[in-house]
Image 1 (tube, rainbow, N blue to C red):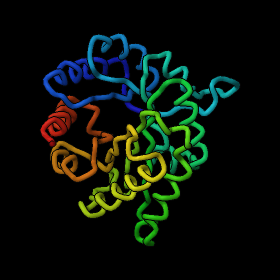
Image 2 (tube, rainbow, N blue to C red):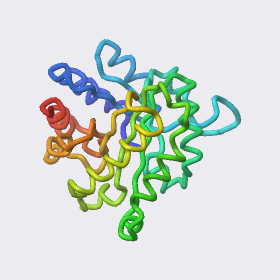
Image 3 (cartoon, one colour):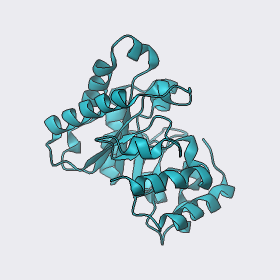
Length: 237
């Protein structure tokens, strides 16, 4: 919930500077800025997405945004199941799966987020939680579709705690194994990492085996913080 019309120059600068890199960049502004940003960036390679969508295509759901509305506003992607939605809005996996179906129907490419809390990790439940979220949040309709899964350890977001390389690698390996087994090894799915990625750690995190990209939070709000991460992605083999 950040960004007013005054933030458009930030997106325009990011798009302009991104031309120097091969890394694919996507921005997920609040819905109020989507049409304006789509117009401002229409001649660039930067993709746009929504931060969430409703599971229904239309109806009496005051205050909600449907996937088709996001598409109409200029989005080609959408983030679903973000930790702030799961824990702040108590969204269950079944609802994330329904939203994913709605996104696919509207022609949006979903980024589906999963991750464990600190209590769950300390209780030794990480594998169980991630496996359940994968099984219950990803519908079989994703077969043959382009989508992404983002691993975001909830306990490492804005807390000062940092996931170790081993912890990240174990989670990424679990996700890849699940995806390959369930959807086939030829699926079009990148696994992203979303645990407080910043300019100082981006290159290292993106170089970890199996990490195909990053879902950026607070560091995406300014050119000075975001562009070094884009550069790090471009330099990563």
